Length: 511
Image (cartoon, rainbow, N blue to C red; front, side, top):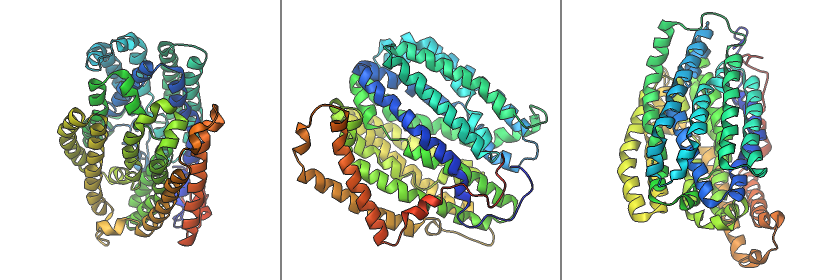
């Protein structure tokens, strides 16, 4: 934060502070979305499965090894006078984590390749190890800016980083380069991002680079959340590893397409959750935590108007979506895809960010422990007896259990001695009801359109336009129906969009 505190921002304005992050991610979403879509068309099905396996390994380490230290910046920086020690010791910690991750890839990739029945993985040992090490080391880049309230600077970094990342992953294969050389260019990008992380994160702050006392406090806060990640990420990816070990790379490619999600959830949920965490820290510092439940309901209510229709459309138009985005050879992934959209609905309530902001990371750990206990036997039995549908079904059940446990902890996290809350008090019932009703009505329209046009789209000419035409027709019908239903319930969509615009009122958010 910069400057001195000013009077509280009016109701609804805090969410607008996420605007720069949302707009930045919206701009780059198309670029990042192009990566799996382009690779699906230029790589052989076996290579495409290998691509997903490589990044499954890297992303698993990316979320496990930080051990919650990077995320702890959202808690400490809004409350700290001296910010440089928190930033410096986080950068050093993540550098060490990157070295551990890279060494682990180098040493264990052969064993993983055996589990996946894909010996080709070992050819990527060096670029994958380098990519993992530098990717981990650069984790604090955007977080360090957002946690200081510098959302515009963070948005700028997202723009540059995501644009370059998309280019280095898409352009080489389009020019005829192999998957191996694409991995080499991606590792080079991660190295440049690591250097930029040190320069950007420490600019404009003074003081010692490390403070042992503060680092111990930071680790004590981060440890429960870090331990939760040690359970959560392997648990969330357990179905991916189990399916990868049970089927050939080509069939695994179909499964991963079924698990594919457009970046809308990350586009809105992550910056909204981040800004909510910072806002709750400010309210606590100012002795106005009673307003926290209003901030939570506001964030969840706005997300419901986007996530519920988004999930309903993906479910209803799944065949058109898979066919247009990936091609007809991936249509067997439609049943898996329809189950996977449940994750969009479960992202409406920003519960994990709220609990981290209030220091209740042990509750997150407990939910992930239960999810892990549920997932491991369920995914093993599911994949063994039901194949791909057993894998995605076990994931869905575990996600519902985990989210339910987190929801029971949110009211206590937002309660104060003067305000006691229950579960019913933190849920935006009106917004959920209106958004759900409108989304359901619009989805029914898509199913009716498919029934009426059955066979009409099966004889279309070749080409991008004709491939996308069924999806575009379904999308136009859905959007029209959804907006009409919202207007019928008294909701004005333009007012919802205005809530995401940055506003000048309230606390200074830095330059």
